[in-house]
View (cartoon, rainbow, N blue to C red):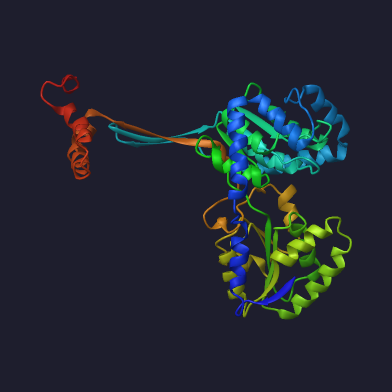
Length: 433
């Protein structure tokens, strides 16, 4: 991990921001072929790809009630209790996001409104294989449940024995998932988008995945809704001379261990802190199980950025627009007011990023790779749709018809003009009512 004088190496920021502009061409053809195969051959294609990629033949993709019950028995009481607590926190936080339908009455002649309705059927994708991400189940399913989604379908890849990890099934049960299927990858996304004999077509797909899952979501977007195209994880820490280098190193490593393309950065104007953090990184990496992954991420996309002052550090943070932003300063509540772009902000030395990942309540599905400039965390809003409502009485339309027709004439749309005009022509049946 390098120490970088940002006044001399400004180009470093572009390397971080642009690292997820992956050349999807290399996977696009493969993904398109998989999607087309699933469209045509449905379950047969799913079985073929599950055998090829997951090394197991699955006859029945649906997880049975018996499998769920066994998973609950096999999951420790402590973990079940922890998942319940996390679910309660997520639920409490996301309930504040609920938006209701409303109407605006302009006298008796005009009624305007917005109808807020839940999506009918949603598919959530949960990464599988060697890893287990029960927190991702909670973060996707709980907001969908709060929104009132009628049916939540979960897909996740099986292991080589055709099983789903117990904690994943336990989290699905706790969060109210309706059906679970043993299928993953681009083929799973295609199944949710088009439907097969076993797997229903959904209205929207949420949840993270690898580059093939991301490419598949991008391709089916428009046929179904998607939440976002998530890139590699990232953390940026703003720190001053009051920060603890041991905490900073631990938090940088916690993101670097995710992925070789994960970005982990410290921004500070206090240069002595940089050297202390480097020392701590060396110490803590020795004992890390995923040491090789973390070291590669820190080497390629890690950096300690030295700025001239705190104001410049804030500017750098806003330019990078990180997924996770920790503020480890003497007064984090003063610093965060200057932050415009971040997926989630963690204030103070006892609010490390894993608190948000697993337990606090705000969603951990966050915009990555600078997209927090225009995107937001997953929320209840992702699982509802809004419909406009308009009522004009005859009198209201008569009062405003000239304005409406003039605008239509300006746009050259004479059919629109006639749609208004015909209602007030002599002999018009509705005009005599």
